[in-house]
Image (cartoon, rainbow, N blue to C red; front, side, top):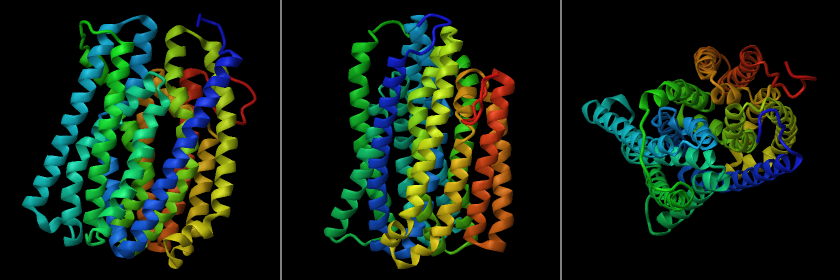
Length: 439
């Protein structure tokens, strides 16, 4: 695409079709995950389910952090190298990123396991075995997160999302059913062990398919390793990614310290339904973030503005529609976890409102991280994450789980607005869906 040429209608339609497919896969994955969570809540009971929820949140948060931003950096550097015909750095990035993610996850898991061995009194006995098993999941999770970024960077979007979010979730559910049928105790440790097996199998499938495509798409040759350039860009992205994951999990993490496991489990059930809503934004980001980077590398300002304008509005419309549907179906879906879980409906409504408000602010985070504003994005995100922790700590003692939901929704909306203002000031792009023009 030449500089100054806008994204064609045919290309835009193709992007939209891919996003719909991604959203469909994520909804299917959410369905598998939802069924798995219902199954575990029913089989394990509220207390064991709360333990599993807390351990899984820590695993996902630290697993994302273990890539040190290289998963997101793949969506920036690999499309840029492809646009410039720079195969050497692309080959080097693939090798470096995979080894770094796996090693960082292993080191972090080893440190955590060592700390538990030296200070077993740091956690309740109910958490000890699940956490040790989660340490084995961590490096595999990190490598799969990097594989997802590589696949997204090559516009192999379905390959990016189907193995971790569809296959892995389905395998977790199947493994748990099989384990219980064979006589395993319905405990959090068994659920984490099933997660370990599912992650290993889905990673093997995904990595094998990516390697096969890369051999055909990127011929063998010399590898170049400008590691300093990669890490200088990736580390701020890591802060953004970690803080972004923190936004998804900080409420559950704080509740884990303040409230009994049964109440944490009830709140976690509401956040599982929220995933149906936030998957809309994920689907849009999966097909547009790397295109932002590619358009920036080619100097295609008109195409970039058209993509932002189109997707900010479509994403808001889809998020709002999905959110209303989820809240309407909330009593039925929450009731599947158990009758007592229906009380979480107000929490779900508050969380959905925050996600819709953030969506209205447009794809500012992706624009900043793909077009050189990653440090500004990281600073804003980290500041608001700290605000989220403070607000949650202040409201939970007063309002319980409702306080956590209000804090999460308010800070999520504030982050969306702050990033939109930053994108307009730094990049000259007006990202909100309701904006009439572009700066």
